[in-house]
Image (cartoon, rainbow, N blue to C red; front, top):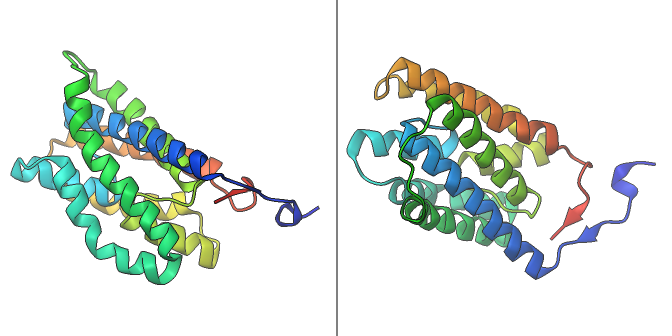
Length: 205
């Protein structure tokens, strides 16, 4: 039987809210580990990290601002419901990434652990959001659109764009930190690529 023919189990509103809170908290914790270790990831979050390290302005401010131009594509291609969910998720990550650094104090953090665990936390958070028709904006919206429209894996599209961001990171970070960031980006995108396939997860919102 074709998976598309199986009955879908719609998410209830409280399930969407819970998923958004849990997903964004996972992402914010990953962001906190990356900031502490001077690492970065890809997508608009990667750009926000770059600007944070280059200017000293905090990640949450940059992350919220960078995503603003992408809402047009989200409305046009993905609809108002998806866009509003995404706007809420971006706002929560922006706020939680600022608060998490106050909620926990990290005295020592191995960069390799931060790379793998931070990337995994962000990937799991994004996966939760994807499965509830939500993204973290920007390039994530583009990746989801290409998957829905052309069948391209969102994780693989993201991986290619992330590579370009990592090259730009060489301008502001030591090569060692960029290398560890690449490792974290691979972990992040593999989680999405292996677990976010069309027809695998039947829940809808």
